[in-house]
Length: 460
Image 1 (cartoon, rainbow, N blue to C red):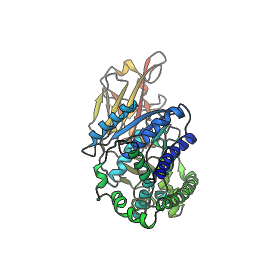
Image 2: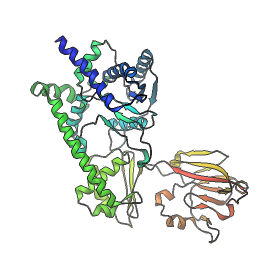
Image 3: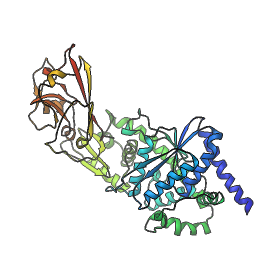
């Protein structure tokens, strides 16, 4: 029995070491996600032991979700643990609230991954294990998940770039070196090495489906099917392979249904319903959206397919909204319409973050470019929204025109026209995003100019 236990402990070490040797290089920076639970505590101990041997740099991230009343105690535990190992730790504090159409767990997970994307590291190391795989598979089956939902968590995967822009750096890769290790082996390792860890009180709350499966169903399964973990893993891997094939099909269909980087409704209508649904799911996932349920996704697709050019369509789920404009599908973060009376005085700042409009305005001085700064300051420099009746003359060879007409010609969707910050000098409209600078305020070659730019951040 003792020899068997030693063999299991040795297997954990060799399993993690083998995966690291396959994936990482010397001098890579690894950040371990430390919750304080037994899984991440064991993984931290192992990575600490291997860091000098394999030549990587190790640091820790602890995410304080603020959900549990003990969240601050867990944070202190992680700080103390890292102090004993002399490993740097970063604390990220979140305020997580449940959004309509999504679970609190999904929102918290998405918030964590948003933090992961911004880390300056080569890999984020997570402590998910073989039992997590099995629990996830059965939960997804009970929820009626499709092929993608039943796919196994991969040992390594790339993150999705922010804003759906595949040219952006997606951040560190996600690496899970314990995925082939059972929870029991991890707990044996912790006890053998006399490690300390925290216990999340919610882990015993049977109102959570995952806990019910873990404490009631899986012990029964193990008595009858002792190898169920490996069998479930094999099934998940089959589903993951099928999911990859579905993604390849979606990418093929996407090329036929995309224009100006926007999915086109007419393209979706040319596909069979299952292929259109697969493409919509794939497109949302590529943009980093927390996916809706299968039922909700099907409802969204039906609304899109029945869309008419003369109608308005706005679909909201979780923190995401879908709108249509001239047959193009726009996916963006859900936002609240700003107060039409909003305005802001510019006092020389290089950048203004405007939460009400979901973006920021930058100001860069440059000789002979943009707005004549001296003329701009002849009146109060104010940013405000379009109220109607504004006119501007961006082309000195053409007459002054209605801003409304210019925005329509520039193909600005209606909802974007209502949230554009306009720059005024007194009562004169000087600049409009996407339209340009009024002729009367354009900087000459000898003038000190001001280049103004609008950076919306609510689009995926």
